[in-house]
Image 1 (cartoon, rainbow, N blue to C red):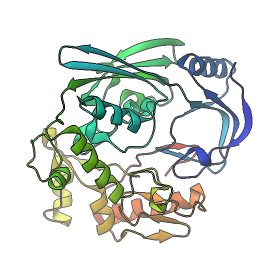
Image 2 (cartoon, rainbow, N blue to C red; image 1 turned 120 degrees about the vertical axis):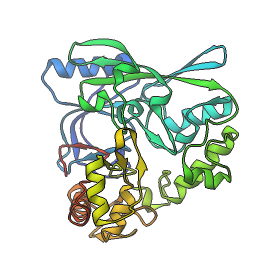
Image 3 (cartoon, helix red, strand yellow; image 1 turned 90 degrees about the horizontal axis):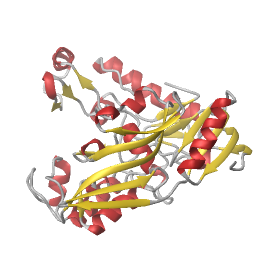
Length: 349
């Protein structure tokens, strides 16, 4: 059995630098060790937190009263068939390193997801996406340990229940422990059709055009860095969990009500008459500009969607107080409720 250590502070294992100590902490270097640790804790009735890169996590100041299993499994396997490449990566692989590999090898499909912090295992849970791509477009299978049945099984894309920043894993958070993920990519030196206006403008191309993979990756990394969304120890704005709120998706009726308050508000049309509203626009126009501060916690100076712990001196509650102020201010002004994107551990908005 992998060694368990008591009283390990969790803050250094999160990009926000927040969170108290775990009652027990163990690092799992393989899928088998992950299953062994989680199964033993479940059998003993011990709470379990599976920890990846900590980039999408807000941990309570009180820490976690149970076992934290840090995923450190490594390995990438590829299979080529015709013009398609299946890439299976262990859950503990660094996500951006995997994207860099696919770009270098000339495999198209995840290049616009460059620079996103975290590990492979978290990508299907959140249905990670950016700049017109998300992982549901390429994931064909996810190997999981099902804590409900005690079995390791393979789930196909349909079983994953992917939706905007959502999945079946998120709906039953904690039941499935991701062990590996398989992505099917195109053996092609060109990106997928550029589907995001900001990226198209950066590249100087029209929407729908394709560009060399390396060029797409460089443009995305530059855009993310400009928003403080690429981890950089020298940049206090990157002490965050990325986008703290999801972009609200409103029904046609809700959109019509918002239009009465703010005629012509920015939006993206969605299937079924619904519309997606940029949360960053709602936040800024509710009176919370970049750099807005509440004690030691502040909104990023580069992007209003990120709540940051710039000097690594805030507590979790202090950062959440800022997030609550923003959420309540947007609700009061626009009648729209913002929902947090990071996973809350032992706390909540």
